[in-house]
Length: 214
Image 1 (tube, rainbow, N blue to C red):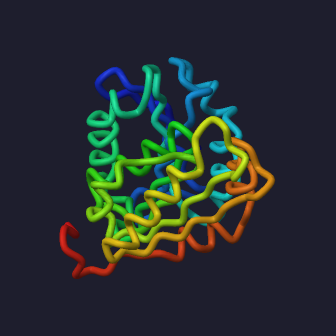
Image 2: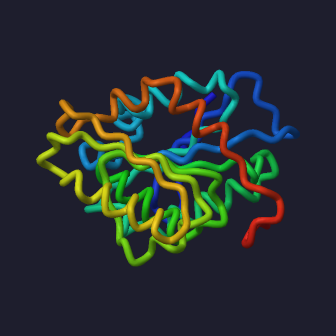
């Protein structure tokens, strides 16, 4: 089951696993798409390869939340995205210990930014071929990171992922960077079709006593 909703002018999709019941609690995966999907039509988002791959894996039992960016980048609408996620977290059917964020390219940047804004929400993040602001890395010290980048990427320099991973680790965090030696910008097809990445992501859980846990 998939629903289209809107918040402060920003459309988003929320996809539920088979057998969903509102009186149960489920992991939540937040997906931020790349620049090529920017538009005002959620049908385009439904055809996004990353979203399709994430939706296919919902037999693992998670809810998939995917906002649709219709402007230049995620930074312009990030506060609305934060509001959307916050509303879903208050719904009562999300396992607050198992909330995750991932995104590719522009959405990779958005994933780093979102996690830095609300690190207390996330059990782990998977930014794909994006980058962030290294000065904010200390905010991610409690959030496990698995980042990905193609070494032949000429759209986003792989050094951007390397910089963020190093900064998180220097701040005492746990950031792993997986590089694809032969991949150009699109390494996301490999990432979102690899079952081991879902094993890792969904295997992360926030401890009850972590600072900021509500």
